[in-house]
Length: 147
Figure 1 (cartoon, rainbow, N blue to C red):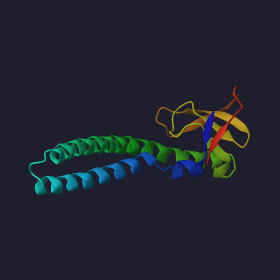
Figure 2 (figure 1 turned 90 degrees about the vertical axis):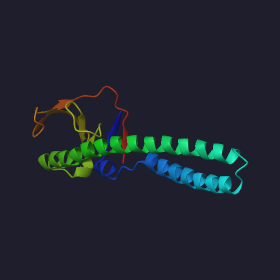
Figure 3 (figure 1 turned 60 degrees about the vertical axis):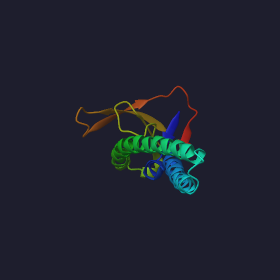
Figure 4 (figure 1 turned 180 degrees about the horizontal axis):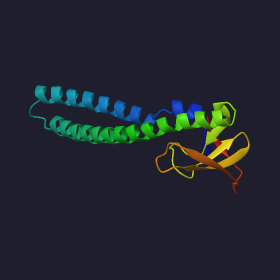
């Protein structure tokens, strides 16, 4: 079972976006090189063909990046809801927010909250503006803590 700390939720970085940005930059440079080589040697069509291939790969990676950005925006807004929740639980139980860990990066009904060594199940209201914690007992006590 994986639990997340407040520092993980607020500092989580997406390496996939960095890879896509680098790939887009490389393909854009390669397209520029292929265009220059094609203009210099018009009879050699291999440069034109490579340029077309790199252009199609560039479009593919731009599509990946747009999809990742949409997914990232949704996840970021849901993670943004989780941080005030963790702070509220910590304040209600008189502990520091670093001692409160959750098993989900999004605030949904039924997630588990671990306060120090005790586990609780979160029951959210339909509007999501209040919650109750009921004591829970986990079956698998092996915990992977993401800091």
